[in-house]
Length: 274
Image (cartoon, rainbow, N blue to C red; front, side, top):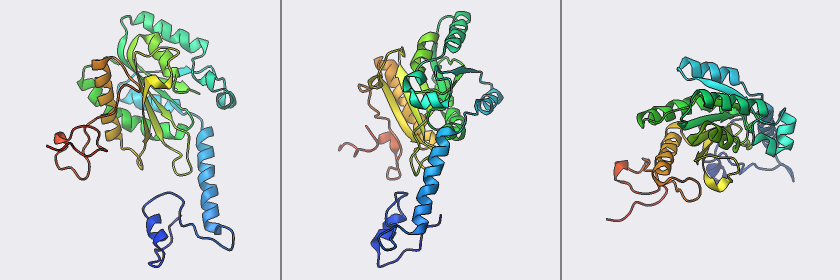
């Protein structure tokens, strides 16, 4: 819905053009205007639809195959969407058949791998459909340059973040990355989350993971997200840890920096004084 023209006498309308937040909605008597109410209902419907959209793993698998990447389809212990939403614990582990599939694969490919990438629908399959392949293209280019061995991409239906820990442990992977649809908001039904764990194993808490969120065209760009993730992975290999003890201090170019290579520390902080 188009935003109303700016009224020079109302500074709130000028601010509204700078943010997707619902400010300066106006009022009709004691109620919101019809347009603002309809816009809210539309955003709520988009968020609800994103939660229930089926995971089109076939399309992602086909696109990966075109790039020469093998994939395996797995399923969590949540048998359907209702059980997934009502029992978060079931989405954190594989069903018996999927676990056996990985044991068979590991037996046929002994020695483990450096990195396993997991793609799960999470709470927004829409985010996975839109952003997985563009992000993976940038990420795997850099991972390949570092010489890391890769397992097939694991596609998990009804999966939650912790399912990547079990997958990584079964494959003997040094690192696990999961791309997952984040809980939709009223302005972001397609936000992709990226979670990274060093030395993944069943039973780890969120304190052992690093998260990069809001990967989408209107949020964090694919290139910047891949850059941050690769920094965390390299530091994790060097320090042999991940999570709260591993901070994101990647050097990132900003609009105000002409030479990003001279910047030290987190890009949100002012550069150190000489």
